[in-house]
Length: 586
Ligand code: ZN
Ligand code: ZN
Image (cartoon, rainbow, N blue to C red):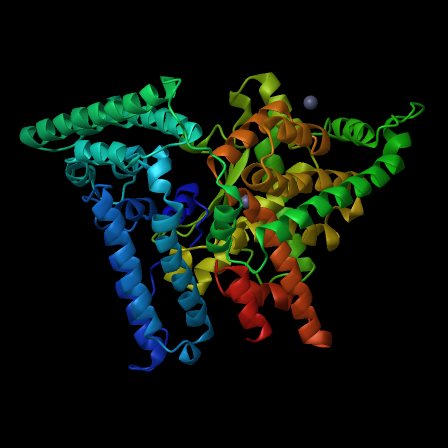
């Protein structure tokens, strides 16, 4: 279940609101579909009970008091749980289900098989110490106002009652960690100590807990801090030991391919996607050079173009990047952009989207700031508010030089691509359709490759339909942006399967993808602690483009882009492969 949790934590499991009667989709009582819906409802509740920490992140509202002790028995119970539900699932006749339930069936089947594989074969629980950390879920209980504060603190008190047993089991479980994940676990767990510091003290003061309850909670918090420190110390001791035999962080070809299959859910092999990414990189370079030659006299009148094509492209990118918004006007600029984008998709008849739907551009809340310039916040599976946000970092609050570098990276051209990707018609619009599809299974187990693939797909689709009027500067920046997605694949697969060295990766990202040093350092680090996720953007988009082509062929003269979009998005955040099977007729 690790990857389901990962998706939720990243907040990309855009999802549906739980305000519909659970089985009320008009099925005949006793029909295969109504039985299947009843099965799904009882499974989802059992799933959260089995994974109480994930329930907290999803905002389910139940089982928050439980902290599962991560010992061998709990791993076995996860596997038994998956096997039990796999059996129940196989009791349904797939052919007799509705299209939407067929997709759910296959999502669940993949989820159960994935859980078994993660526990029995991948065994991340034995080599990734960063999977053990209760800071995030405790933070959610303290700060997420799903219930009155006093009640939340009582829940927290129960949740951390056995935190010492939790961390003792964790250290027991770690057989041979990788250095990279041990290092990450130390940093993240030390970060978690903050959750039990002054913020908690303030909350306790503001609550109406009894004195006895307060004492108990604060004692348990102190014990939790002690347990976290003991865990971090044990890992630091390994890290300091020159003779300690760490596991290689590279998972290798065989595990990578299997993980690719469970996480992405696609008929492409990882190697297929790697080859396509390498070909795309070459294609982008060729296109960029053509544009650079064309624009050269306009931007470098009288100056000779360097013989090295990549260097010439780099000079052109740097020149065009000087054209950017000021920190003070960034939010206004983006607000206007989003409105223009909404108008454009209606004018061009690309979607039947209700443009009065709430989508708010806002300054990024403090707890999520620092990592990226912008992000999308979608409504979670149990969020009844239903407002999507496009979050923008407040660049007036950071040093001028840093803001300048961020703004060159997100200049007047790439900023438009960012708004397409994060908001319109990328993540926020897709999230809106996903809500409308009202499928809890697809919301909870949203497919990251579909979600990211969609946002990437829309970037080119918008330019192809005339956004930015084919300005060569826009295309040049679009290709630069797209190099990031294909180089994500090359980096991930290269490091994990082809033994690429750090130097190989840094050289490629710097000279062939034109990235900044800070960005490169972050990407390399991410590629050492995650696997497959970096492939999801490019793979998802590749699949959507292939599906669109096949759908066009099937529909012939009756094809329209709007019809493709409406149909594709109507299935919710399901793997492209499953949606494709239904759109093309199984
Ligand atoms: Zn500037
Ligand atoms: Zn995205």
